[in-house]
Length: 446
Image (cartoon, rainbow, N blue to C red; front, side, top):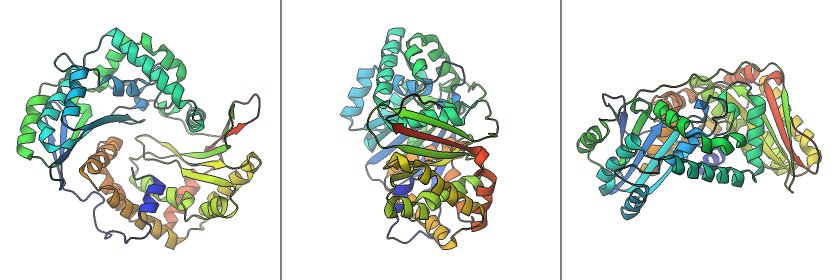
């Protein structure tokens, strides 16, 4: 999982790329495993007086298989701050504030990650409090209902964003069986029904919040032997085994699909064009997709130069591919200045895809994109916190702590013909889903 495209290219605009044989993640890593299955990863990073502490749970919205139960992975991101019998929620908040720690969490389709960053002297307390809440989370039904109401408020707030509705419609249209069909926050109806799901919440926690489904990452200024001893003592009693429900496999798409959103407020029209593509476990194709993100839709691409800078039909062009645990989507989301140009913009994208499949690949620009991705990755590892989160999110994809290094090693070998071959195999009309958003129309739908 590489940096977002624009951050990558802007960061790399005027500096030399790192040596071709340099590792994408250059910091020494130690991996320790506890008897209960918990993995602990120590990252050697020169960060005097500071430490980053990340806990990766390999559970996300992809694991919400039961009908009517979407949104529970994200829900637990909230509930994990409800406290335990030993350390209440107020105690936790007061302690991290007193110690000068930044703390937060995030959930995606494939993972939930909890993190703290701050003074290294706080590490023993971090270990104590984190081990306690992952083993002994304590909440009653009234607290559950209160938090469920907060999530409904979060959904209502995000629903005012056209891109949120675009994502919902794209996922529902492109996926018919796999749980990627719903967004991370979940379906509105499921969120509205969530207050009645207290018992199910307990079952979800039992299934997925287990030591063998967790990895702790620590980067910065700390004593490794002493820290490992503390972790073994604090996390050793954690019990449970991963009891994941099987995620349905998405069948091959056999005809193109379209969705339309009729937005009831003034906004610029949008178009999102996407194709089903392989998962992150296919290293070669994952590397190709990360290159194609920038090659097809980045600021140096003919599409961007024409539609954004030249003809000025589009004001934003955003590549939407990101590495995923299961096969997901590769595509581009564009904000168009005038709805009358939606078809023109779509045609331009499909023409560029056709050229790629026909073998029209600029080898020099491909090498420049590759160098920029390598450089921006290194530039992004500028503090212990960044090193820890980078390793955590890439480990979530396959469980391999060395995934990022392996993906970049393969990326270095990609040739122009690989881009053409990928386009021919994946960018077919029958494998494409297109979603548009416009204002000023009545009716609509899929």
